[in-house]
Every structure is written in structure tokens, then in C-alpha cells.
Length: 630
Ligand code: AHR
Image (cartoon, rainbow, N blue to C red; front, side, top):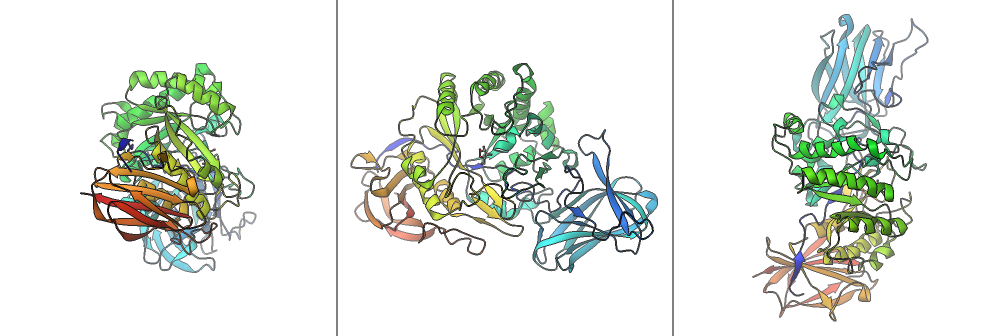
């Protein structure tokens, strides 16, 4: 280990968020009611009326139908319920594969209602389990003929992963309902319209350098009409226009016909989350090309302007003063201070001349108004091949600043490619390794596992990212998270159900690198060469001028333990240090809800003798050695 080579960017290790696998609605976004505003394609999706008979006027207990007010573009549907008292009518919401409720926890209910002629005297809300047992309840009295919001709080009496919300009515007549919403009180930072605390905590613990949002392919949409439009995701939650998710029914092994985006987690909330977890925000916007794996629809060049304007307005929304139109909207939403946006991505995984043509227009417009903004460009879905060569060559000619590369490959590829960036042009564009994950079976196969082989192979590769910090400025694993019962893509870094969340083995690899990223890259060599797989060993080293540490990362990808000796003579170090060890007995070991930390680091003390670190690396292990500088 010798002298500083280059600075490590604070953004080196970040997170890539996409609303895939129910990551937003049904996941991070803590709303428990599915289709709360009756805006899904089938407006009663998620709702049932078990005791309703629409055919018999006299005997029916009640009946709910949705009414579409088409001139109301952002919230066209509401639900109109006709109730015959005492006949046992109820409306039930199933949640996102159920609702997770915790004993003694409080839940905040909110509902809009218009009670015609005061027909309904009371509305009762109950958590029920599959046997209809009541697990907590509350009620509201709808006093107004006109639309009015009513709120209440209630407590769950038991813990249940698959509760449902049952709504019953006292009185006879018609009542209109909308925005039936339920959140745990205990969201991250106790925010209304908040995020799941346990999931944000996992992100926070990573100390991510950036948060990329909102995707992924959802940026692009299957068609241009279905692209992600940030302006439709801000302002009042009930006025955000619902959109079918691009991952709705993508793979036939786990159909998700109920996958829609309500945008309760919208761009304001993404910026706020970035701030909360100390990550630089990195939004990616549509560049006028729909997903090239789907329609590949293109906006004509002479109609590109609104897309470009969206980018300019987003920068104003994030950074503009309260005297600018978009800065004022941000301030009115509760954030007077700018969000300090420094990066913006143009297009997700686009390729070909069509991309370059559009990209140029964005760059010209953004740079002429915001010269300091760093633009991230795409290079397509594969880290090699004709399109990749074409795109990266063109982008280089255009002096692109950062190019986003994606790789979903087998574990061996990751071990074999630890040298990928060793010969990248230091004067060319910087690299954003924006989406990567080792695939244990095949790309996005339903049988992929977040197993230990994948995780340590990524670690081996990451030593290569780190050794090349001069050119690699941002990196992120993808996808970030998945609902255990509603995923479309594996593997994923964080898994959750309605009650719990855990980090995979890959999560702990990311965490080890991210929380030990350092500030300065040091050279670590064996026989004068970087350690890139000789004897299945991989290594990188950094110094942290804030914590005053030298940090060495080692990966032993061999099936046998290996002893190593590290010469640290160049550094003035204290003799006591720490070793963090991440390992597991079998290549196919995984973390799970049952054993969430089966593969997680253990820490032990380390004694440095004569400035020589002697380490015994277990078979298949990732080791981080930390030594304080004097
Ligand atoms: O991470 C899953 C998908 O993989 C992303 O949406 C897309 O960018 C890539 O193809």
C-alpha cells in the first residue's frame, strides 16, 4: 500500500431506486390501501364487496360503483356506495398482498366523503384477519353533504401480515367516497404521506453517496404516453395522476396486473428522501424515447421541446429560488431551501443514433442555462457490443461528462472483469456503473438468488471500481428492492414483506464498500501489479482523511483459505485496528426473513506488527481492514 493516486468521489457508492417489484406503492411508500382513489384501470381493483347483490333491489345490502367525472383529469373517479342499513354490507380493501399491522401500533386513517342528505350516520373501519377477526377499529361521522376530508387514528390489537381493511356503514342511502388512505403513524421522520421506516433505515445505513430515481425502464414507459412525467408527481397527493406501471404484467411467472403508480412517492418526496439519507439526488428523465425493449416509440425531433423543458423546469424546481415559478412550488410543498441538485440524467437505457440526436438537444439547452449541472448519459442495456461501442464513441466525441453503464451478468463475469476500467481513457467521460448485479441463473430469471457467490463476486468487481476511482465516479446495484410476494425481477438488494425488511448478502457487500469508501485512493499491488484475481485474490485500498484511517479491502474468491501479508510501511499507523469479515460456508447461502443476518459482517480487533498486516482470509470472503493513522 503506497501513496494517494486520486480522490474518491463522495458519490462513489449510491443507490438506484426504481418502482419495480412493488418498491414504491406497496413498498417504500407506506400507504396501506391499494387503489385508494379508485383510479386503477379496473376502478374497483383491490376492493371487494363480499355481501353485495347487485341484482336484487330489495334484499341487497348495498352496492358500490365508481363514477367517472371525466373533466377532472387528475382524479376522475370516486366510489359511490348505496347502503341498506342492517343487511351487513361492507367494502373491503385487500392492501398490497395484505396489510402489515403491528400490535399496539397506531394507524392514521383519512377519507374524503360526500354524505348525501346525511344518509349515513357513521362509517366504521376495522382491520380484520382472514378469519374476519377484528384487529382494531375506529369510526368517523360524515357530517357534510359536500366533499370533506375526515381523519381518525386507531390502534392494532395484534400483529398480522395479511390484514385487510373492512369498511361498514350505519344508516341507509348513498355516500360518495374517495382517497381512502391509511398510513402507519410511525413513518420515517413521522411524515404524513410518509415512507416505511424500516426500509429507509436500511438505505440510510448504507450512507449512500447518491440516490438515483425514478428508474430504470419506468422513466421511459412502454409507450411515450406511459413515460414518467415528474410534473404529474408533485403537489397535492390526491391530484397526482395514476399511471399503469411499466412493470405491470411484464414477466409471466409473476404477473402483477395490479401494479399502478399513484405517485404518492413523487419527485418532491424523492428529493426529500435523498436529503434525509445524505445522498446527492440524481433524477433521470425521459429523453423522448419509450423503452426500446417495448414500443421504442420516438418523439419527432421537432416535438422534443416539452421533454427538454421538463428537464429545465426540474432543475428550477430543485434549485430555483422561491421567486421562480417552480422554486415557489417546491417551497409551497414545504421545502424553502433548494435541494442542491448537481446531476441530471438524460434517458435511461437508450441506444443508437436516435438517442445521440436527442441527447445533444438536451445538453445544449441544459448547459446554456445551467452550465454547472453535470449531465449523465446512457449507453444502452449491455456493457459491450455494437450499440455500446457506437454510443460510447459518439458520447466521447461530444465530451460527455458521465456515461451510465449497465451489466447484469453471471458471477464469473464479475470476477473476470475486475480489470474492466484499468485501461479506460482517463481524459474521456467518467463512468456511472449505474445498474449491476450478478445473476445466479440468467438475467432476471425467476430462479435467481441473492446468494453468497453472487455477492462476493460483486465485491471482487467492486475492488476494480474502486481502484479506478479516477474514472468511475458513481456506482449502484440494481434493482434496489422487492416485495417478496410481488416481484417481477430477481435478484434484488433488499427484500421486504408487509411487516419486515432485510438486506441480502449483496446489501452487506454494498454496505462494507459504501461505509468504508474513504477519500483518497491508495495503490495496493502484488509483485508491482494491481491485485485483480491472481490466486483468486482481489484488493483495493483507500485512506480516509476525515476518520484518519487507512482501509484495505480484500476479496478471497478461492474455495481455500489464504494467508496474506500486507506491507504498510508507507503509512504512519497505530498498531490497533479492526477487521470486518463477511463470509459464508456455502456458495448458495442466502439471507432470508427467518435469518436476515445469516450473511453479515463480523468485527474483530486487529494487531499490526512491524507495519506488516498478517491476515488469514477465510475461503470465499470479503475482508475490510481498518487502521487508524497516527
Ligand atoms: O433494473 C431492472 C431494469 O434493468 C431497469 O429498469 C432497466 O434500466 C434495466 O434494463
